[in-house]
Picture 1 (tube, rainbow, N blue to C red):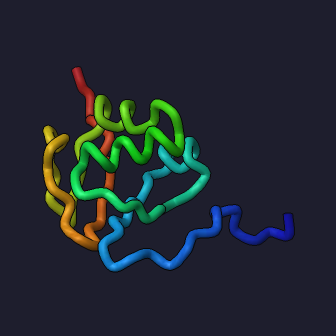
Picture 2: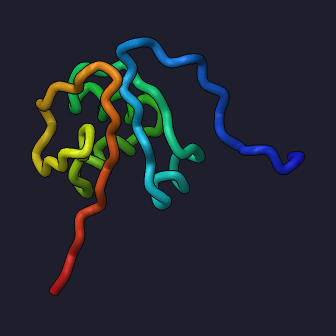
Amino acid sequence: MDGASEQPEQAVPSATAVRVIFGSSQRERTGCSEIYVEASTVRRLLGELNDRWPGFGDELNEQCAIAIDGHILSDALYEPLPDRAEVHFVPAISGG
């Protein structure tokens, strides 16, 4: 490589696409820092992520809360995703 970013090429997102931004451990799995996905609910988003990276959406659902446009939700499977929403998966904090 010539030192350029190794991010996959993406088409210009549609007016309804959801922007998913990955944290560092998620970037290790996906190889990219963000993607645009057509999904109307969190459940559909997770399904799209499973299609791209088998098992990844399931892992995120089990191990993370989700932030939709800055609002963190811990049980968001059936939450609607507004057009052009920004989504982050927030790893659970464990303690003890």
